[in-house]
Image: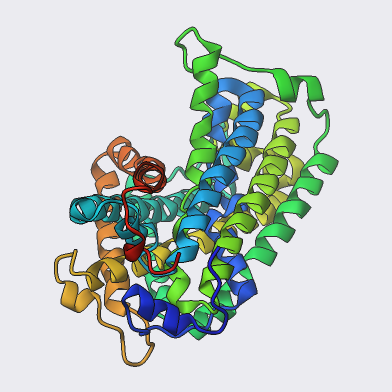
Length: 430
């Protein structure tokens, strides 16, 4: 792993770029950022229903466990590669040094667009999910009659609120790097503390908890395909959506001190911490499935929300749900921040329309504000699709994990396949 302490600008110059952004992120804000972009406390409750409906509690528990191990393998490979090339382009830029020279243009172009589209779909989906979670909270506070809440959010309500959230994310991401450092350094402590507290509250307050034998072994055929194995595989949806965007930290490399060392360490730390917390939260919620079918078909629309209500009542449940929403807001801000830096790096290499404008650094904030609002605009466009068809929007959001993971795996495989063909003269840091 390459380390050039206190010489980040020289390292960046050797890669081929001049320092334009301010390096204000420290060790702790970098780790906090890496953990917050995965956003366990927000993402796990938001996606808990998918593996639960597909294959029951054991599917949710073991898919998260196995998926976290897989994420650590990919994340460690990503960390190793980007440690040599700590730029805002992340894995897109690494492509230049892992494939033969004649294949660099097409490979980099595909890699860059996969990463950019995956991240933009991710930002849109997080904003949409936060909107759903907030409106679910509004439903839970309305009158419950005959198993239905008096307020039921429409697609229009969800989209309008998500647009407001995207604009809010854009305002945060337009701040100076120093301001972002001061805000983001609190994201991980709140996430970790709240997750542990909620797990304790759920296990302590929920009566008639399910036995461990049921939690860890009960698999259902929720897919209706006559195969519990197929249903089990569908359970990876939750962990795949949550445990991705590992290279988000690398997109902040040009704003981080000693990025070649801190970035990779932050990625591995985030995957380990988030994997452990996510599994703990998943197991805790599965123990609290006191009435499996009723919770799965809760009028709130989100099984995790009903579990919180059962354990804490309306007041306690809303407090716990509020922290889940808050952490998901952190995830949205972090995801957009990575996306905007990727857009800036991509346009810096003239790979986007209007690249000359998108690659400009705002003279006041010293951040790529034009790139920020470019991402906001296209994220809003994606969310507006949900007004006409929620299913279509959900399908678009679903490209997040495949597109990002494809961009990681493609570079890792290329590095292994072409490492004997790529000349050492093209790899200035190794």
